[in-house]
Structures are given as structure tokens and as C-alpha cells.
Amino acid sequence: MKPWYEELFANFARAYDREGYTHGTLQEVAFIEAELGANQCAHILDVGCGTGRHSIELARRGYAVTGIDLSASQLARAREKARDAGVNPVFEQRDARAPHFTAEFDLVIMLCEGGFSLMETDAMNFAILENAVRALRPGGKFIFTCLNGLFPLVRSLKDFANANERGSRTLAADFDLLTLRTRSVLDFTDDAGATHRIETNERHYLPAELTWYMHCLGMERCQVWGCTVGDFQKRPPTPEDFELMVMAEKRLEDTPGREG
Image (cartoon, rainbow, N blue to C red; front, side, top):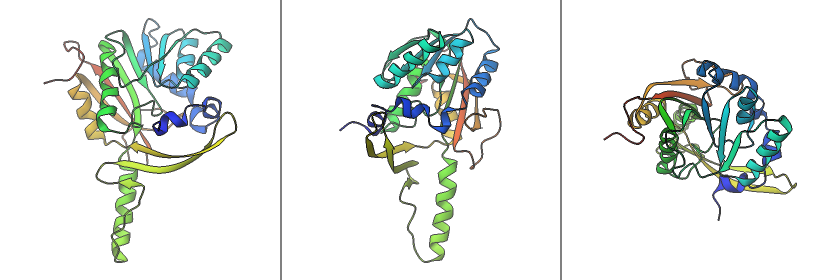
């Protein structure tokens, strides 16, 4: 059986582009461009690029962009959209958990749970971060978003307190306080009009562990912000933020990989 994310994105490209969370591209890319200082010499890697919305808009603005994704159908849609837009980002089918590039990019972006947070194990998720950092040149920047562990954690603890008042110790079934994973059932209709039901399994992250991951991977100046799709900005995270945004820079003296 395929992992849930492979089943979801096997034939979901056009349906994906209709999702509300994909409609904030212009503001999100403007934020990214500001972080680059509008340096159009920068070479950008978009990990988990999906149908290419960020890659294509960055290419429109003059940047050299490579997008990678696990889904062939998402990439086919990305290439179609790029042709329509008259731009030429490079799109490649790659598994972000496997090493892909070494010190080739000035910026790596991984937005809207582009692979990270979706994997079955923490080791797989960490490998995605590790390979993204490996792809950066020294001094390069890494910007990614992920699910905010504070969001379900605070809600589950409130549920727990309310349950105890009623003499019950039952927690919400979909969020595991020990693993910070949410399991839920998703119904969706694919591009062929077929309906599906799958069980998702996503990992939420806390700001402190994300900062530690970046430190272990040779990154510095790590900042963790609250994140709202279509409204990227630098502001402290709160339990009301569904996502977090992490920004960090690769240390000049370090080589890719973990510190000892």
C-alpha cells in the first residue's frame, strides 16, 4: 500500500490548485524575494514544489529555480503551468528524503508542508531537512514551513482538563500528545472525478525542537515565526498559528551534514 501522501497526490494536481491555501502565492513570493534582497543572481531550490506555484512566480521575477517533488502528476501540472506562463524553471522528480544536491543553491524553500511534516517517521522528516541543508551553499538561506505543535497541543490539554472534570481521562483521538502526530480521515475527489478516503498521519513541531534541528545541521541565525498562508511576516508564534515558518542561514565554515 502506498503512503497516504503518495495516494493523495497521485492524481490531484488540478484539484490542488483550487485549494484555498494555494491562493496566497504572490504575497508569499514577495516575502521570499525581500529576504533575498531581490538578488536575481540567487539560485533557488523549491523542495516539494507541487504544481510549481512558488517556482513559477519566482521564475517570472527573474530567478533561476529548480523544483523537486515526489509526485509525477504534480510535476506534469507544474511544467504545463510554466509553459503557459512563458518561464523555464527546472522541475525534477526526486525523493526529498534521499540526497539530491550538494552546495548548489543560495536559497532553499519548502513551503506548505512540501514533504516535511508528512513522513511516517521522525527520521524521514529529519532526512528531508538534512538534504535541504546539504543543497545550500555556505551562507545560503533556508525558509520552510511546518505544522505548529502548539496549535493541537493547547487544544488537547484543554480537552484533557475538561474531560477530567467529568471524571474521564479520554483525550482527543486524532492527536497523540507523546508523538505530536495527528491522524485523521480525509475524503477527497481526484482530477478524474473519483472519490477517495485515506488516513493521514502528520507530525507537528515545536519551536524549540526546530531551532535545535537547525543548530545540529550547521545552521545559524535561526528564527521561528508564526505563519499564515498568504500573509508571510515575521511575528512571534502563538498557539493560534496553524503553521510555523523557520528561517536560518548555513554557517560559512561548516560542511553539509550534522555536527558531532
